[in-house]
Length: 196
Image (cartoon, rainbow, N blue to C red; front, top):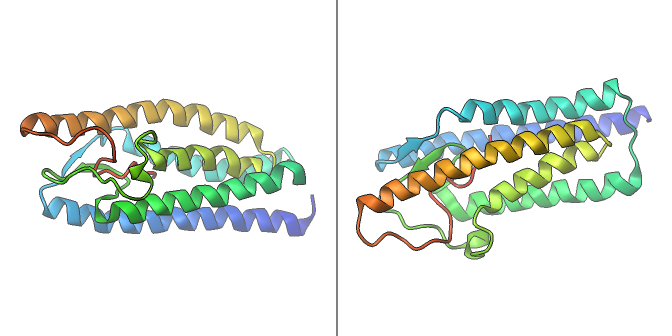
């Protein structure tokens, strides 16, 4: 592995880290918007685990490549890089579609309808942002053949998504039962299907 390529991968991981910071800035702004409109927060117990998992992903990418001397294999690395870029595109499409309703935490604003624009108009893809998270979490390490990080993240993320999606669905259901004529299934909750 050449020094130049290592620098390139380091830059890639740092750029993904900066993207996470940008998400947190947007999420904080949107949280203020939601709470000002009576937004109800749920699932705070699993949120620190999400933050730790996503931080661990970035650290694992760098440490595994450096410590295990993982090579860049073009036949794997370039397609995985394309998936990382596509995942970022899908993530920001979700953020833009949800607007101020998107957040990294589960915050549901009573009375707002489910979002049904952007990727949320695809009824068969109820949580498109989590698809972006899963793809990026596997692809980013595999850009530089960090397969252990990809595998560990994928398994832990799958377990965490079971908890997260259940939390979102329960938050929506509790609001739906509180009012008559709840919105039909489909679209996305006001939580945005977020990442940490």
